[in-house]
Structures are given as C-alpha cells and as structure tokens.
Image (cartoon, rainbow, N blue to C red; front, side, top):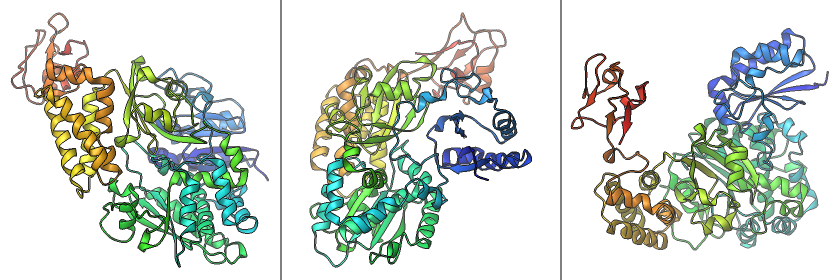
Length: 594
C-alpha cells in the first residue's frame, strides 16, 4: 500500500544525540500497533530547527513538533496520526522558552527559500532512491548525454553563482580556468573542512543530502576532464562521513559513480580524505598539502590550484554549499537561479544561526534578506527580551555588525562595506550583556591558536594583538594601544601569506569601528560596561536585600563570604576569584556586579 501520511524524524547530529533514533523506532512500533499501513516513518537529515530538537514533522499537514522525547511517540501516533488531533504541548511557541502553547510553526520557515537544503529534512539521506525520486542525478544524466563542457560553463555563468566558501569568486570562472589547462590528469576537490566556531552548515548539508555533493562533483569531473575527486572532511564529522561512504557505495552500485557512468565512456570516482581539525586547512593550498600527506601549511599563489593543485595537477576546489547548488542550476537552468537574490549576489545563502537567539539552527534565505528578518522573523528575537547588540558574520575571519545596521541586506557588497564578510556562513548573535572587547579577544585567540606559524605577520602580529587585548581586558591598557591595534591589524591584512592571517584582525578592526567607546571605558575608566571582564568587576551584597540564607557562602569555592544565618553577608574582595557563583545562586537578587 502506498503511504498517504509521513512522519519525518530529524536524524541530524543535533537531534540524533538526544534520542532521535529511539524516537524513530518508537514511532514505527506505534504505527505497527495501530496497523497504520498508510503511514511511513522516515529518518531525515537536519530540519534546521536545531535549538528545539529532537524535531518531528508530519506530512501532508506540515505539523512541526519540537523537543520530542521517545516517550512522546505513542501520543503523536494515537492522537495525531490516528485521530487527527495535534499534540499541542509539543507545538513550539516562539514567544515562550518551552513548548507548551499552540502556535503556527511556519514562522521559522516562512522567509526561507531552500536550494542547498532542498532535501535536508525531507528524504532519508541513506536511501539513494529517495534522492533520485526528487530529481537526483537528473543533472548528471543531462550533462553526460545532452551537454558539453562549454554548455556547463555557460549555464554557471548565466546563474551568477559565486563560491560560498568565503571569497565569493565566480564559480564559472574557476571551473573554466581549470578546464582550459592542458594536463594528462586533473582533480576535483570538495572542501568540507568547516572549522569556524559555531558553524555547521556543511555538516548539516552532508548529513542530510550527501548525494547532491557526489552528483555535483561528478558533473565537475565531466566538465573539466577529471577522473578523480577528493572530499576533504574533518574527522570530527563521523555521521557525515558515514553517509558519504554509504552514498558512494550506492552510487557505484547503480552506475552513477566509478567506471563508465550511466553506460557512457565517462568515468569518475571519489575518495574521502580526513582532516585532523586544523583550521588553516580550510585554505586551499594548505588543504592540498594535507591531501598529499604533508603538513597543512599554505603556499604563495600563483600558481593557483586551477593550474597546479593536488599532486601538481590542475585542481578544481569548491566548498560544500557551492557544490550543493550545482545540480539545481543544471536541471532548472542558470536563468532561473539568477532571478533569486541580488544583482551582485545571486541565489541563496545558508547560515548557522547561533548565539543569543531563540531559534538557533540552519537557515537558508535569498541573498538580500535583511539582518532584521533573519534575527527576528526567523530567529525569533533575543531570549529574555534583551536588546540586540551585534552579529558576528564570517566567523573568526569576519566582523561585527551593530544594531544600527539591522536593516542591511545580506550580500557580498553590503557586508564588505560594513567591515565584515560573508564567510562560509556563521552568524553569531550578541546581546546587551556581551563585551565587544572580550568578543574580539575570543576570535583573535582562536586565530592565534590555529595559525600554522609559517609567516611572521600572522605568527607575530596575531600574538602581539592578543597580548594588547589581554592588557586592555585586565585593566592595564593604554590609549596608544588602540592605535597599535589598528596599525598591526592593517599590516597583517596586507602582508600575511594566506586568508587566515589576512582576516584575523577583522574582529578587532570592526569592533573598534563601531564600539571604540567600550575600548576607551576599559582603558580610561578601568571598567567593563558589559561586566564581562573579570579583572574589571567585583561582586557585592546589598544589605537591604540579603536575608542571611547562607546559600552564597555555601557555594563560594574559596570561602570568602562571611555572615551568620539571618544576618547580612559580606564578600572579602581580597580573596574573591570572581567566579560569579554567588550571583548565580542568590534567590533574592542581593548579589550585584559592580
């Protein structure tokens, strides 16, 4: 019997760990008990609603359940599937912190437009037949039998797709460069070395739709004349790796990968290479060195990988999101794709929306969507109704954008004008409690730790900048430090060998541009306005609010809080380590930060 109803269970990493597999098994068991033969339960990739997982979605009525537990399976099947009555306590309420009020779940998705994530949360990523049923491998068939390499380049040029790895280089141009180079051997590479803090766009795509990447790389092999591809992916993504391996096995079995693809004379195969988590290996030349078994360190360019890449041969490298767009452009046409987004930035962009936001998760929106729409219409706003302060785009390579630019369209041009970058798609939201000097220090610390150390502007400059920020956040900063930060940062941008060093100062320069007053407060007044920098704050107890319950004293790890039961307590500032435990445990708001 053909199924008429579907229950989709998010089986991405964010939902899988809290029990998605058990939820899936329980739902299948309950359907069996009720003889619900017209219902199919499907494991899917990420549905995007990560903050409220595990997530279950029912079709065709498009009901989204959040925070589902294995014990909820029986109620979902009996009440909703069998009797048509939704389980209201599991419907997400965008205005509350818990799922207990009925609301329209469409808010999170209403302004999204899914191209890259078109199959994520819809198909079983480990079932190649479900991918094929949604036009999977139709693009490959089209190029092998109906198009030549120049036709493919023309379609990409018409689409206006720019690389989604960060630089935004025209995809058609990179493909064409590699195609034109004469060589007895060429390679295609997928850069899945996603290392930005808080970013998981590539992981979500690979876990939810691995065949889209395999199909796109095979199309590229046909276009540029390559017979071998590599997927360079960090070993910390075991589920993505598992699904890619399963996808390659199934594709080979159906003649979609390997020798004589689809019965033609075209052959192409793919191999997975695991990265060890070095952020610098996201840079193309360092990635190539790692694929070859060398230490991942960048090299000067030119020659570019299109001319001299893996094993010294012409190599085409794109990141996961770029690859995921290719099959759609081929099947639907470059002209269709070019109508989405803005004049300079065509198509959509996937963001990992994280930080101080109600609805963190994966979102995909047309280029040109404003920050306000992403933060408030999709993200649901800031928890606790606190004020939005800034958003960091582009990860440690990007910059902050303050509240005054919330209505800025997100595209390559506008982000550059504001001193940030698109990057691969990390978007971290900050609220009124965040210290921008501390934020800059966090990102710079990451870049310093991840620097390969090859070039002195990055190796020495990054450490020098970090030491200056450490001075400022501990109350020892001087006014001339601000000019030093700007001078060294600009020198790094100009002289560093690769993108890591060139962009490492961005968080500092952008926070200085928009929040220099916070730097001055740290330096001139020895005060952290956001009360985040430990050396510049102190904890005190209000006499008129302290009831002498002793809970703060009992939780103090260094025993510097004095006071008897029902008497006002005091904190010995000379011994306080400023851990904030007293502030956390006080039930009477008697502890305050100064």
